[in-house]
Amino acid sequence: MSQGNRITVDARGIACPGPITELIKAYRNAKNGDVIEVWATDPGFEPDVKAWISRTGNQLVELRKEQDKIIAVIKVTAKR
Amino acid sequence: MGSVKKRVVIVGGGTGGLVLANRLPKDEFEVMVVDKQPYNYFLPWLLYIAFKGSRKPIKREITTLIKPWVNFIQSGARLINLNDRYVELENGKRLGYDYLVVATGATVDYSKIPGLSKVIDLYGNYHSNEENAWKVWRTINSIKEGTLAFILAYERYRCPPSPLEGVLLADEYLREMGVRDKVKVVYATSYPRPYPAEPMNEVVEPILKERGIEVTTFFTLDSIDADKGVAYSVEGEELKFNAAIVIPPHIGVNIKYNPDNVLDPDGFVLADKDTNRIKGFDDAFVIGDASALPVAKTGVTAHLQATVVAKILTGGYARNTGRTHCPFDMGYGLGTFVISDGTHGTVKYPPNRVNHLFKMAFASSYWSMLKYPELWDPLMEAYFNATAPEKLKNIYG
Ligand SMILES: Cc1cc2nc3c(=O)[nH]c(=O)nc-3n(C[C@H](O)[C@H](O)[C@H](O)COP(=O)(O)OP(=O)(O)OC[C@H]3O[C@@H](n4cnc5c(N)ncnc54)[C@H](O)[C@@H]3O)c2cc1C
Image (cartoon, rainbow over all chains, first blue to last red; front, side, top):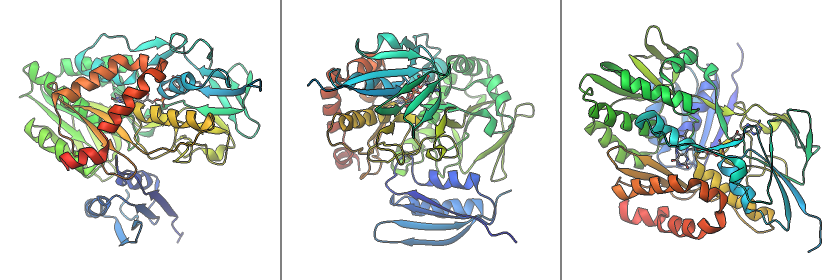
């Protein structure tokens, strides 16, 4: 089986239109099996990622807070 | 000073390009603006062609908007060679430079969404040109019943509030025409909520509810079928419509770069977020919509970045603050602004009549602001200070 790519998206410092934009952008170009890691500082990012995951059915591997950023690791599984 | 003037080539005579050109002191710089067309377009007015049928002219000749000492060549650039420091024009002529500023804006690409070209042909859009904006005007004048869908196709587009501005202005117009009870207005977006930034959404969402506008979230447009009247999402949903106004995907303009690794997959130019220097180059900058920076694609951003680059070129210290200030027309003479910066999130700024008036005042002053930045700067600075996010947050939260 082929190994998916790992895509890192730095969305720190973005508040408008919001870090979720960067996730959706990466998602559009991703394939099933890819892993997307997003870094953000906007506190709104956390609920957004959760809502996005529950709606799209992709897999949230990790969501953690570090001192200077929120990190979300998502495995792409729900692309048609 | 007696020293040799520095040669600055600015590719693109839009908002960012002209503000910069008119700012550079004539005794230090020889400035050349290159644009593929003779006009500067005031793109925000496409909204008022599309939803109000406005006949106000939206273009001016670039030669009337530049200082007498700024040079202008009307030609498309086809290659930008950053390694050898030249811009190649369509006729093969090469312009060497000491400093380069790319200000070529964004363009729309219908081919990214199967079926989109046909939908645009039928119903128009208000993010490309006058012809398509007039088509939107015809669309909202001819729909008498069924569903009018507004669909945000891609995450990157000009002016973050513009999709919802269109929705709200269409609602107002359909009510005026007396057909709103028979026309359902739907807005589909890939975001979790109608306006992507939460605090602003708290202002917008109740207004959409009050005006009876339906919203479909997490709808990432995959393809669209004009004949069947159905839009399909990546998430597997279907949206039926009688007419659809799509905010089309935006990409960078068609210019080759050497090296080509300064472009992202959509053709936007990679840049340093503080200084707008093109990735890996000290003598080349990209401002405005052409950059890949994850900031709002607005004229205000282009203007502020041009100001930073002008300061850097004249030997001063300047950095982007990430300030946004996007006007948001909410219909019925109400307006607000989407205000944020690199350290403060978006302000929850409720609409009022004065803000709408401000938007209209900016619109009428637009070309004067491009030509005489030195006259407008003090006013703009005072205005931006008065509306700084940390100040407004104290009032509105
Ligand atoms: C409906 C709508 C509403 C908007 N509302 C607002 C608003 O209220 N406030 C706001 O601040 N912004 C608004 N905007 C956004 C604003 O219009 C843009 O962000 C702004 O024009 C960007 O300026 P720019 O200098 O980066 O690019 P542009 O103004 O697009 O200029 C780019 C220039 O480069 C030239 N060019 C392109 N390719 C080449 C080439 N190969 N060779 C030479 N020249 C080339 C083009 O001809 C053009 O003149 C709105 C936009 C739309 C569509």
